[in-house]
Length: 484
Image (tube, rainbow, N blue to C red; front, side):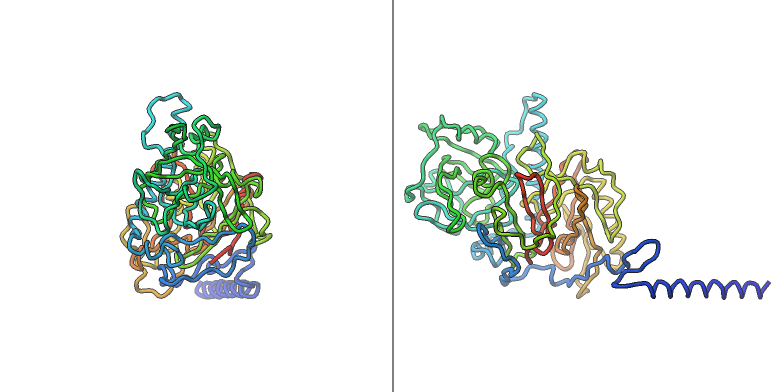
């Protein structure tokens, strides 16, 4: 009996050694063959320097973008690369405040679909503060306005359609902005839009509020999810994106009564699908095609490019997923999220979870919002892979946080999103973690309150990606390494 057990033990040990040798011999480039080629556990993790998660104080512009043509530099509104930096240093919101405003924005976007559902069912009660979705966009560009041209720093956002800037004489009130406020009386190309014009009637869909009339001049009003607002005359002016990209008769709002959390920017550019958006108004030249790269830190820069003539910085590496339509919110960019991977493993989430309310991509929402079932699956898998790190107190929005103050570097699981069109998008490390401080570094996702709430693919997850909107072609492209 004893001899038999010893022989059996030796046989098992020998087979184990042979199995181990086979794995070692047939492994290559971090992969091991067996039952199909499988990545080793190590290849499904990122190594992240903890200090890289915090904002830098010095501007380090990206050197990756080689685009030409109608390309504008994109910087974070509150970062050291911003023209508003000196102004924003004093007024920059805390991370907690940014997240609070982000939730207000998300509430507003999601309410737009609910309100339009009520309209379709002929309900009569609609919230008075419906408005559009933003007011606290993070990213800014500089454009020229008027003749002679004056340069202004403007927030850009795909979740809004209407473009406006503060205007003199500010008979109502104007908030403090960095540059001198635009004065239409000093421009030879400004004209007011009349109340009886077709353009005036277009305001309702672009602002979600009906136009008003003052001495036969069309008056607009727009209210955002955080109660920021702009009100003034609807006008036409020459807009200059680059010296060779000049557009006369551009329709925009000349705001004489404005207030809100705009961080010293002169106004806002709407990049939605409405006929009054910048994308639609310049479609004769750019073909409803634009792209951007959002920098990974507030101290870096990216770009916003109109048209397809400049060529992509990622070239053939672009992957495209269909842009979907939704009659309840036709100007938003709907996409088809079909799954999520953590550490190379596809989470067990029914595709119906994402289809219940639908999903959009939005440049102004900070933290990606997921249906409750999808977020729970993501959170559980992430926590399971992060057991070696001590958890920290959660925030009001982010509930999976870690205290990394004792570490120089950490290993975090890779996260990828799966989209319609059979594409897989690996997220940059900055799209996985959101740092309040080194003692509170959180998973950069949040769950919606209900399964019926719209999912939103936010700007933290879009960082460093070349994001291409081929609106005419009905598709959205992603490419890696668009900017740093």
